Length: 355
Image (cartoon, rainbow, N blue to C red; front, side, top):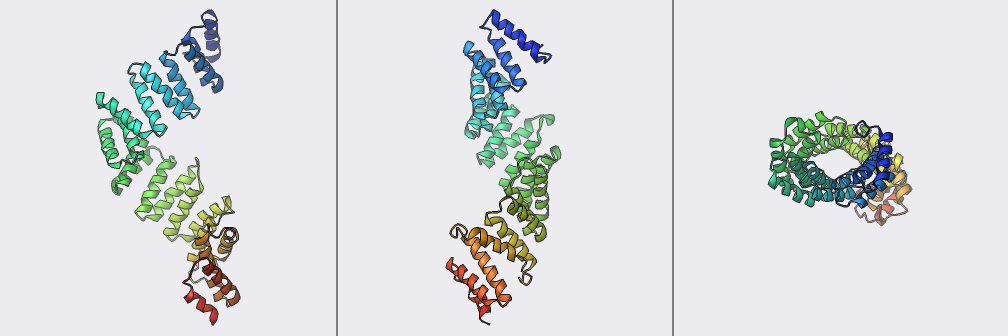
């Protein structure tokens, strides 16, 4: 029944076996595994803990605990369970790879590198360990070492075992080393392998922006947003900034408007909307940025120290706008507020209010 994945009868048979012999560790472990497959995680954990109590040296229990912890997002517990499993399983190659992966996933990058080196000293062509080592070196900011490891990895791994994330990781390493052409080649290979992966689009967007190709950067930031999966306000800001730097100010304003929609009580989004609108109205004659700078004042004036730069920028614009409209009282009021926050260089624009 277990092999055929018929959970109910299999569980019943294992329970009957335990009634006959409560010390059957394997039966208790299998019950835990079946409960885990049914996503009954609390009872699965309880059953596996019972199996562990029956025989603390029964290696497969720790493997199943590791997998259960992984499925429930408890990466550190998964790592520790696999560490015990590796000790008890007598050099199980698959277990060693899994343990190294959990070291990486738990962000213990020095330990992942060290453990991979131990395995590679005995098995230098273990491409799984080379992969984990290269990934961990990148996260540990050891970019030269990571590049060498990934080059060794690509020279070792069978072609059908290469993952899209391998090209992505290698591309990110090369980008950190300013090898931008090679980085783009590898990131595009990663994209060809998995076109919906949001992190690849982010990596490509950042690299295109670094190369001042703002149109392509904006395209990939937009694709990252379209992919969903945990979109943040930073993603909308990155999209808006790419459009802004590429002088596509209307599109920039559209992206920044998402920030003001989701976070309407902070000045940041309004400041960038104002900058985009100001760029569409460089002489300020239409006042396209006015309402957004007024929002900066409305949302930021209560905490002037925290929002000092944004407020000075807003007061300067509004002072200049009202000076152009010959509303000198309003203009002087805004210029004075900018001065009070520390801007002493307003003589030129202040002169507009004396005519």
